[in-house]
Length: 255
Image (cartoon, rainbow, N blue to C red; front, side, top):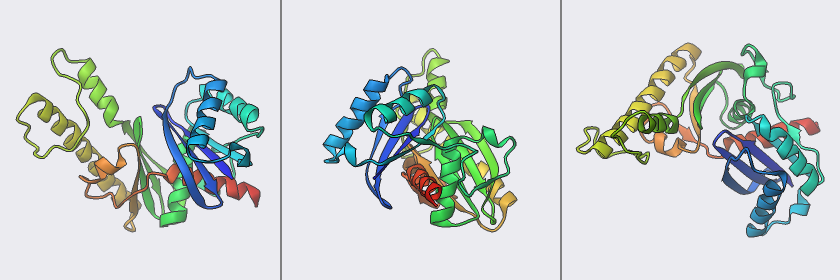
């Protein structure tokens, strides 16, 4: 079986594939200070809770945008699973032609998202990943990665609003019933949610025009389901797109 790990700035997702079937997946808080042993113990505990035997893992593929974790995850894989992991980056043979300059600036998560989106939904397409940053990733009809846009994620915006104002409280991110908030909390939730949906749709409208060919729009990431409910352009939500992309890239290395 294959263990895949997507290490983002805020969350780290893990998944276990038996062939093409995702048999288990989990989301943890990314902690740069977590030790090799802590990651190893967490992984073993998750396997035990899911009724899986960690000894059945015969390969590991990793996408990380947090360079300080590379050594930790590599050592964890070698120590607890006795395997050398595949770290995906722009030099990996993914089958994806990257037109972004320089290609080394494209995050591993954006690469595997694009690989999975093309395989599952076809091209042209746009992948919106609602992570710490919200990334828009454009793939043309030839399956080439064109580039995209990067904006602060909605949680960053919410935190900044709380940190930089004296009287505004921290609020949950949710879709309010009305745009016109009748309290400070409701007004903040409306501004954050509808403001961010407006940002997302504004970028997608212009990006769709540039790509042409009616691209499919796929959302992934922690808040994808919530934000997609208000978007005019997001067609699909795929919470495990990045994990699927890691599987596809790993399988390509076997050919």
